[in-house]
Amino acid sequence: MADPIKVTKAYLDILNQVFEIEKKLSALQESNSIQRNVNKLKEIMENDIVAQGGDDITGFVYHNPIGEDYNITRTDCEASIAGESTEDLQITEVIKPIIRFRSGGANIIVQKAIVVVKAKNSL
Image 1 (tube, rainbow, N blue to C red):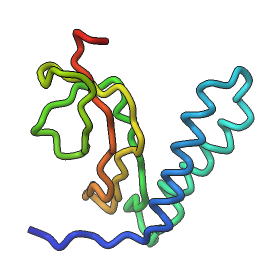
Image 2 (tube, rainbow, N blue to C red):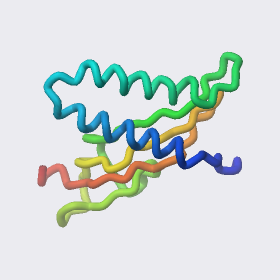
Image 3 (cartoon, rainbow, N blue to C red):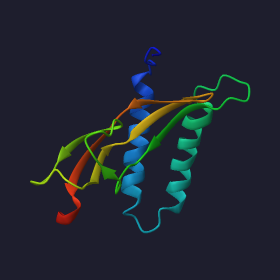
């Protein structure tokens, strides 16, 4: 197995802040101009921040798993279960997103999502 990649904490902090801004934007009525800025920040992190030249895409991407199914075998999330049931769970809140580092063909999780899950029948 390959050695885990070491990622500067500042990169993760930036992406976590962009994620928080994006979550707050979803509640605003006229967020288009701000959303353009958020999209530009995401594009920089995905393509420019650690670009090494050549045709390989190198950078960071994040994924918001809100609404996705959750089970104990899922390795990209750390979950707190809200409620009694541990069956048929769904992600209801995302505190931190999944952050991946892409380089060439590799796609490595550098931060697991921190989520809250509930049984679907209690939603």
